[in-house]
Length: 106
Ligand code: HEC
Image 1 (spheres, protein in one colour):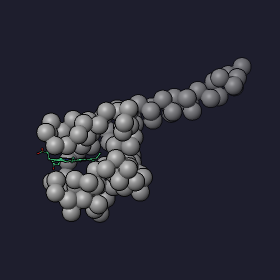
Image 2 (cartoon, rainbow, N blue to C red):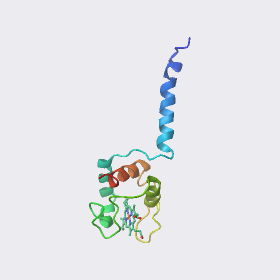
Image 3 (tube, rainbow, N blue to C red):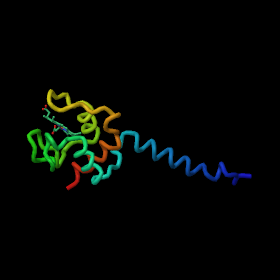
Image 4 (cartoon, rainbow, N blue to C red):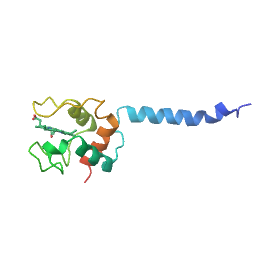
């Protein structure tokens, strides 16, 4: 009786839900640094911050010394007259996390 398909998959469903809550919640989502470097180039961050993140006209962003939350807020709206704003439709949270992984990687 207890080992109906539903009860058997329940732990997996619970785990997936917990994982999703963790990733979309307050902790830093895990990003892929190699992908991040691609997004960084694709979205033209390099035009201002330099191809390596530390060789442009805008402030150095690599190595980056800020939390993911701060970084996300900055990408969404840096409050700068120069740096563009990037809405989630343009750069998803996951892509921002990838960029963050690259900028904070050594
Ligand atoms: C048109 C030029 C330009 C582009 C494109 C641009 N930035 Fe910026 N960015 C700036 C400038 C200028 C600042 C400094 C903010 C200020 O004081 O106005 C800045 C600030 C930042 C900061 C904060 C640095 C700090 O130490 O406070 C981060 C992080 C950052 N940019 C990341 C990015 C990322 C990631 C991208 C691409 C998605 C990007 N920028 C695209 C010009 C640019």
